[in-house]
Each structure stands twice: as structure tokens, then as C-alpha cells.
Image (cartoon, rainbow, N blue to C red):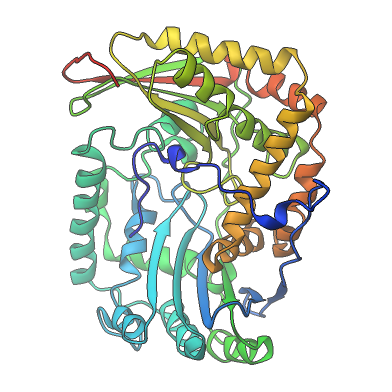
Length: 460
């Protein structure tokens, strides 16, 4: 299934500004509202329909409100293991029949585990919507949970850990490493990929209990985006999903983090890495607060794009690295998570550059942000970046569906998707200064240095 590569934040590049982002007079324009039809079935399933006639395709997405954070103690990696088990057969589909059903009808599919959800999607020709809904309902209704499937997928997941983390230079850096050092709460601070011995210890009854509890309709959101008739789609949703029983009462998890009051530092060795690396993580404001949106603007100003302050300082002027990455939520974007989060800065550098000297350069840029209000030109560029990044997400059926599902699960309010621009527009230079002063203080951060197993020097 999809996995994030090294230095995920480096992929969060600034997109080209959409033509619709500004009118001829230079004033920003808003996107047309995204259609949102929201309903909850009696069994608790959240259903979001969003018609889009631009292409004759539909995307069906099922999000379960359980991810890397929320998994049993002593069973680390369990949420990710279960993602794989979902493709091993269900009540009416044998092993690999789901994959053949989708692919033989011209579609594609995948699934992934993220901090606060596990998602499954398939994109099909528009006339195959009923089939797509039936197949997803069949998996929700009941998996073919056998010892053979469990043993097989335990091996698959362990191999994935070895390939993506243990035997990969910079494997897990920084998305997997940094939360373990920065957070206090076990749910936010354990090894999300999982300890190999604990993966082996998962039993058939563990899997069945996990499915009954977390893969029930009352813990899920179903989103349909694309070319379809909402009345017809809703009729099929009720037909195939409506009689799936609710699951048991969901356990409650306290995933809050205390306010950090002292800087944390950690070091780990990577025997495969050719050069040192550095990551800084600052704890984020709570979602949906004014400061949360201000941090989005700070990210655009400080980190995103070649005109960002950290790129200009670290790459263009000081030459300490060939690139700097990071952002808010390295496994997605600033909108599709629910619990505590870090704003992350990460880079690879030469051995003749000390991590402290690089941190000093970062501190200088943060001090400039705190001590002087953002000028109008910089604010305008940041707003354009934020709109461009948002439009890029909303420009695909998957991106649109991802936000609709996230807002349905986390906020019971998928229509929030149409208020994001308004919230970002409220951010002022004064709020940016206030937010930077509180959340970019040294005592709110964790610094992780990665040392290579064999020290090397040389240019970028």
C-alpha cells in the first residue's frame, strides 16, 4: 500500500497558481462551493456525496476512524497490519477477488494507514458505482479472517518494515522518528510501524476483536465523489450499507499532549545514511483555532517553496544543504489529521556542518518572524501559496474526497471544506507574530540529529 518516502515534506512543493486564484484586478477569487450532501444512517455510518461531472468516473472512499495512534498496547503496528488484511477476502469475495473486480472493470484501488484514520478507495468508470459500493459494503460487513491470511500478512508487513525503514537510508526519518521523541503520550509516541516481535504476537482473536470494534459503520465515513446521480447513489448506499450492524461502544482514548516547557534533544545513528540529517519538530496549535490557520501561513512563509525564508537562508545564502523539507503533517496535509501534530523542518547536510550551527540559522529566521510583522507582499505570496496548495488538493476526486471524509470523521461537518479559504483569509500579521511567539519558542520544540554510521564529508 502507499507509503511516504524520505523527507516527505520536500514533496509539498508550491503549486502553480490556478487561473481562478485571482481576477484581472489582482483581488483573490474564491473557488465555487463544493457540493456536499451529508447524511448519517441509523447504524451510524457517515455518508458524504459530492457530484462532479468533469469526468465520467467515480471515486468511492471508506475511512475508518482508527490509525497509527489508536492501536492496542503491546500490539504496535496493528493498525497498519489490519490495512493489509482488508484485501484478503470478505463474505462474497475470495482472496484477490476485490482487486480483480476493480481492475477488470477499468478501475484502480489502494489503501493507507495515517495518524488518525485508515482509508480505502477505488476509482471506477461512472457506470460501475453500484458495483463499487457493493464491494466496499461487503468488506465492511465481514472479512475472511483466517489464520492463513493473518500469518501471510504478518510476513508482508514485516518485510515492508525491513525494506522501508530498517534497510533504507534515512528510513522513517523524520515522520516515524520525531513523534517518538517529541511526544509524551504513548498513543502519540510509540513506533507506529510496529515492533516485529509484537506484530508476530497478534492472534486471530486480536484481529477479530479489532475488526468488530473499529471497522464498524459507526466508526466510518463513506464518501462518493464524481459523476453520479445523488438520489440513485443514496439508494444504493442504503441498500448495501444500511443493514450492517453497528459495532460495540467505541473505546475512548486520551491522546492529548501536555504543554511543552523545555527543549528536547535526541540523536540516533543510521548505519546506512551517507550524511548527517537534522529535524526539528514544534508542537502545533489545536485544530480549527485561529492559531492553527496562522501556522499554515507560517509554514508557507518559512518553509514552502524556493522563496521561503528557510530555503533562502539555508540553501541559497549559507549553502548548508541542497534542500529543506517539512511541513504540517508529513503523512498528508494540514487538514487531514485530528490529534496532536508537529510542524517539522528537516534536511540532510554535510558532516562539516554542525547541527547547532544550522539550528542557529533557523533560530535567526524565527526571531525575525517574531520581532517584525509580515509585510504586505509576503502576506500576499503566502495567501497565494495556501490557496494554490488547497486548490491542488481539491482538484482531484481523491483529494476532495479525502478532506470530506476527514471532516466528516473528525468534525461531523464535511461542509467545512467550503470554509477553509475564509478561515485562512482571517489570518493577520499580528496573529502570525502572536502564534510564532508561542509555538515557535525553543521550549516547544524537539531537535533530532541523525548521525551516519560511516562519517563522510563532501559537497551536496
